[in-house]
Every structure is written in C-alpha cells, then in structure tokens.
Length: 187
Image 1 (tube, rainbow, N blue to C red):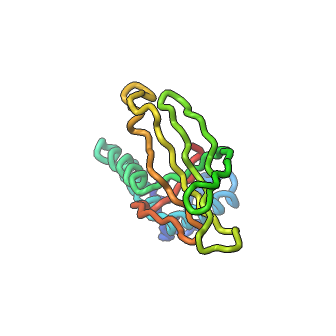
Image 2: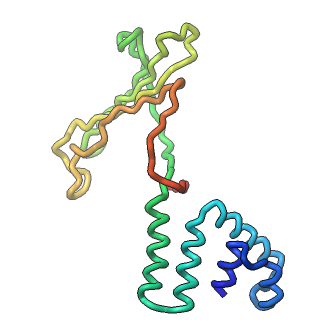
C-alpha cells in the first residue's frame, strides 16, 4: 500500500489506476483523489516527503531495525532543515524623553521584573533626515539588573539576551538562516 502511495506521490502511478486496481483503498474516491493530488503537490514542493515515503516503503518491504532507523532519520533530517517562526504579543508604555539622543525619543517605561530584575530599555527614535516626523525606528533592548541571579536551576541571569536589535523602516532585517523549510509555531 505504501508503495502505491509513493508511486502516486511521484506520479509514476496514476491515481485513477490505483483506485481501479485497489477498490478498497478508499471509502470516498473523490476525497482520496483530492488528498493524493495534494500529496503530489507537497512532494514537488518538498522532496523530503518522498524521502520519508521511500523509507516507509522500505520498512514495509523489509521490516528491519536499519529500515526503521531510515524512517526516523528522514524525519530528523527535515527537522534539522526547518526553522520555526513564532510571535509573542506584548504591550509597552512609552514616555517622551526630550533630552535623549538627537532631539528626544519615546522610551519604554519599565520597572525591574522577575528574579533577574529585567528592565526594558526599548525606544523609538525619529529618523534624522525626515522632516515630516513620520519615520521612526524601533530599538529593542533589555538589561538584567541582577546578573548573579538564576531564572531556573542551571540558567543564570547573566545569560539573558541583552543585545540591541534595530528595526529600521528603511532596512529590512535579514539574517542568514540555514533552513529549507519554515513552520509557524504557536509558541
């Protein structure tokens, strides 16, 4: 059966021919065809789908530990080439600080939080060359005021990311990520 799925995914076996040869393969032929077309599209866009099916077909034909490990390796290889994207909503209140930098900035109003005493230091700075006042950039930063504290056993407050991240309206932030796939994660 898995061999038939692999054949349909690669286009080597037609979906209609598979349905004709194996009438019990699907209770709803139309839904089956729709699913197989999606599988073919996924396989074209993501060749690792075929790697997993090949490993699974090999396991079905020859159920050995080696073939079982090939299935696991195929999934693991894809996971290593997958980046996860997530977002976390948050709120911040800003206050105007007129003597900050080049004529003032909106600076986050923050109190130390948690065992590390994390203070938010983020700010909005007006674009120097912009006379309209429409263009700003966001600079995200935080600091641990208690670097000798611990968040969890084995996780020191000195490890808190205290880097500065600039989100500029005229520059896109582009980091080189070594991933072929992107998954959207809820966390």
